[in-house]
Each structure stands twice: as C-alpha cells, then as structure tokens.
Amino acid sequence: MAWSLKQWRRERVLRNGTVDAGIWETAIARFPFTRTLDLEASERLRDHVILFLNDKALVAAGEHELTDEMRLDIAIQACILVLNLDTDAYAGWNEVIVYPGEFVPGHTWTDEHGIVHEDDDPRAGEAWLQGPVILSWADVERAGDEDGVNVVIHEFAHKLDMLNGDANGFPPLHKEMSRSAWSHAFEAAYADFTTQVDRGRYTEIDPYAAESPAEFFAVLSEAFFETPRAVVDAYPLVYEQLRQFYRQDPLARIVARAH
Image (cartoon, rainbow, N blue to C red; front, side, top):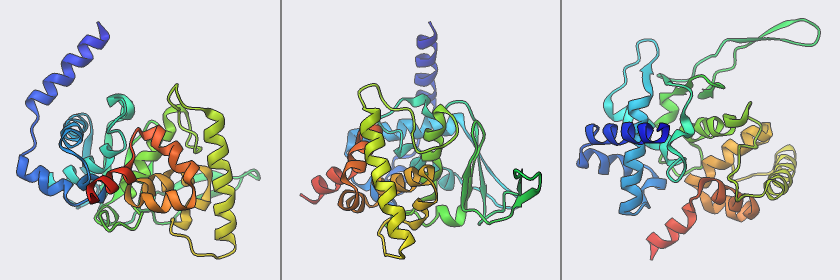
C-alpha cells in the first residue's frame, strides 16, 4: 500500500507539473553534463526536476530574488546526480536556501579545551545533515564553464554521502557494489592527491578535494560530471566506482555524442 500511494502521488505530481519544452531545452543546453543526454534520459531528468521542485522549497536569502529559471537551473544540477537513482535519494529535508553571493555560516564549536570558536570563513555552499542545502548564486552561475567546479553538484553529493550519517566520503553503496573496492580506490587516490597538493603540484582536479575524504568524494563527483576525462586520467578506479554509484558514465556520453 505504501508503495502504491507513493507511486500514485508521484504520477499525480508529474501529470500536474510541466516545464515548457522551449525553456527546458534552453536550460539543459547550459550544462556540459546535460547536453550529452539522449531524449529518454532528458525526459527522465525532467521528471526528477518536476518532483524535486514540488518537494523542495527553493528560497532566497535576504533581498535576493529567485526567478523560475534560476530554480530550474538549480534543480537540473541537483537532479543530474540522481538521474538513475531512487527518487527518494533527497528525502528527509525540504529547503534550498540561495544567497546572492558567498555567505558566512556563523557556526560555533567548542574545542577540547572548552574554548568556543566561530566559523567565519565565507562559503559558496553548505549541506546540513537532515537540514537544508545553502548555495551562493554567484557560484551557481559558474556552472557550465567545464572547469570541474560545480557548487550544486558538490553540495548534493554531500547530501548523498549523508544518507548513512555524517559526510565521510563513504555513501551507502548499492548492493551490487563492493565496499572493499570502494575503499581501495578512494583511499589510494586520496593519499596520492593529498601528496600532490602538499607538494604544490598542479592538478586538474580542484585542490579543495584534499581537505578531507568527504570533500574528496564531493569534488570528484563535480569532476565526474563536468570533466570526466580528468578523473579517468588521474584515478580510473575512482571513476569506475563513481560510475557504479551514480549508475552513469558521463565520459561515454561525451564520446558517443562526438561520433
């Protein structure tokens, strides 16, 4: 019964929710990871987007204003991650907060000596466990540059990572995936990457990935969708694990489109 009710609700939302065909084509043409989708995948993505926009409140912070086109852009980028995943992957929270530019979260924390610290570093994005995703629109607008940097993909990768607790770079894997294969690929790649960054070497992948295993997973997810060749060239085993996890192969789509 629960499944039937969920399916009925989903189908009702899709029947009542529409995206103008012209607006949709313009929107998906903005991003390298959607330009390569075939018709069937594009239609499936549109269904995800309609459901996402129905379930989530995308709200502006301060005096910032969000247009329908801006909401659509955010939803498309968020939903590319779950194109071939369960529609409930983003269940359990309901808000995306969008600032006009970088924001200061103002978190406080207490160290082992009882001293209270405040986090006053500007952020382009943030994802809270069982809470909202917070984004800087100025950084959202950068998507499409094909530089491997995408704040929406980054923060929503954190959300997937958090499906089994705090983000740690080890999201819940599909039953057909190997935990040992994931650990082997990511641990070796992370150790190599942090060494490269510590030695000041240039990397095609954003150096922020060296911050922690959680950030490594989120940044590699950005690159997986935006610049998949960079991931394959640097860490082919990680690419294979991401291909299995997201059930997508962005590089294969690029190659197929080129031919």
